[in-house]
Image (cartoon, rainbow, N blue to C red; front, top):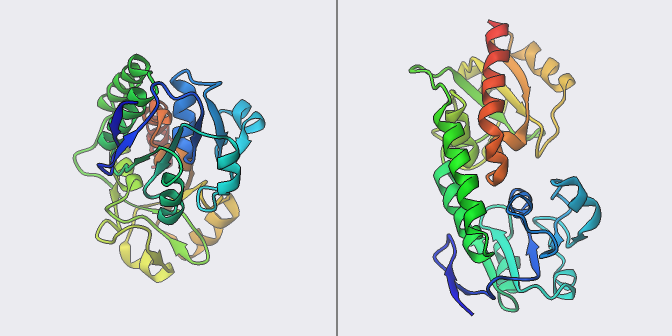
Amino acid sequence: MPLFTDQLNRTVLIASPPRRIVSLVPSQTELLYDLGLDEEVVGITKFCVHPEKWFREKSRIGGTKNIHPDRVASLNPDLIIANKEENVREQVEALANEFPVWVSDVNTVEDALVMIKGIGAITGKEKAAETITTKIKSGFSQLHIPNIKPQAAYLIWKDPYMTIGGDTFVHHMLNHAGFQNCFAHLQRYPSIDIEDLQRSHCEYLFLSSEPYPFQQKHAAALQAQLPHTKILLVDGEMFSWYGSRLLKAPGYFQTLQQQIDLMA
């Protein structure tokens, strides 16, 4: 069996091509589908909602943070695909003692492109991966990025409110969408309060659809406390999914810009 290097620089011995794949990451599950793999994928998480057909039919091995090792073992995988941030290190390491585990580490679009090519290589889908990455690069190259980016905050959670720091994938996607992250000086996903948002003087506040499902009622409550901030509900998948959903992100960002133009 050939050796492959994952994004943590771990060397992994993987059957080529693998025939029984378990994905622990929703955005990478969708990528496997778009690479043309179907029968090869035998297990996914309960959060792997795309494609819908797989969500209905594939065996579920728990959540991204609470994997059921017995369910994974019952599927006898010859490849498990995990992610440094989305999965729990101890759970991934335990699985790696029993099965080949390839771990991604994605913080930028460039990292995502490397990940897509890497998964293409280990699954024997190099040509399909190259096609996807070429289209992603083309889409992002056509985005109009203003010279002066408006200040924006992005919330991912409520009670407490949580935002995104400058070392996250969402931060980089926010930049690609044409905005400057008000909380770029912080790291990871810090908790903040209304006073922090007021002091940030953010021109825009984006309320994500995931992991917390913000709704219009939440926007209305925040608007009362942030009267000078434009508040919008946004599709969290377009900002945080780093697989083949990146094909759709540039078009979504353009639509978002048009929506904002109408608010001006």
